[in-house]
Length: 399
Image (tube, rainbow, N blue to C red):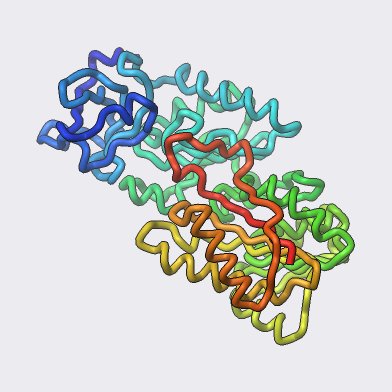
């Protein structure tokens, strides 16, 4: 473990406001840093002491000159190099919070900057944990991170998931691996909101399951009690299975992925709900149009699409897509029923997303009251100075 005095220094440009960093902002962008020959020579993920324009130390950072986020804050400027003990301390704090929030070890353990590990995602599935090291500094220190994870949590299996767009932006590979123990040879059952979900930890989307929607599943589920439920962009049955667990009479899950729908069907079977659960594979927009032509209505309709606005450049097109979702979904809601619309696009803030949804509902000839606004669960904490970490929005309307 080296003290920070051994690390090279990198410096903010003269007109860059250092107060943001002093007050907790965790990123430095490439256009804010002096990128001289010495800085450009640093290896991806190297440690350095960030200085302001007057050469006053600000923070210990990790540097990646291949990334638009050229430096990520790790610690105070006099901190030592992160080792297993350093990782264990941060993992321990994150675990203590989750232990107070959840009664079973199924949750997001590390949510990147908000949990003090920039660019790192760790989801826990009982005795197996899946790490997404989406920043070069963490990828280079996986051995210490994995050892600390086993030490702190007692998990026996640790998997590295190298999929996703973020690693490409950091110049990292897409090679997944088993870091400890073994990969599960079958989907892992996850109890949540009274239902059982099947998580494919090696071939599924992201780490295998979307824990962030847990509180929104819980809110929406009773709205389908005693009625029929339509879950569009269902993935592994997130909203549908929760609604069945709360007394919905029937649920139809729609998704474009046959493997995801197979996992949803397996979850329904595991929860004793298979006789009330059905799936329909196809393009979500086309299926909603077809259901309307068939005269189908449901007491609860949920649409939880992928990120239509993953960047500012895609925002206008994304908002039009969210409006179209609302316009097609609203006619499928029975009179007095509920419509839940979700967005995981950080570029489209809550106000813009809500406006798009309201336009779509209005253009479908429906009216309704907004009865709930939901966000990601507490195992997905939001970094208070990083709007990107507050990406998930869920709006429930009574129509």
